[in-house]
Length: 111
Image (cartoon, rainbow, N blue to C red):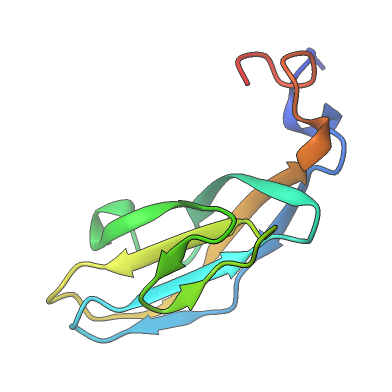
């Protein structure tokens, strides 16, 4: 395995969300990663859903405020908002994370 692949980053893990339902009003949802870790990325794992279904699909960090939730002072995660007019059921995501202190240019080239 070459240096910098996710399995070599200390604390690397995957957080799987519960299933979210969105009505057509552009609802919000999100998922936090464990304390002491930072979100590296996410993907939609529920069948039939795609990134184009969402107006927002992005990482979130400490003290960020969203209509549905305010992240804590040391909290990281991922947030998503369905496009207005799009009703979605059973949306599920995976959020990839690693120890916050482990992320350096040596552990992940380009970081």
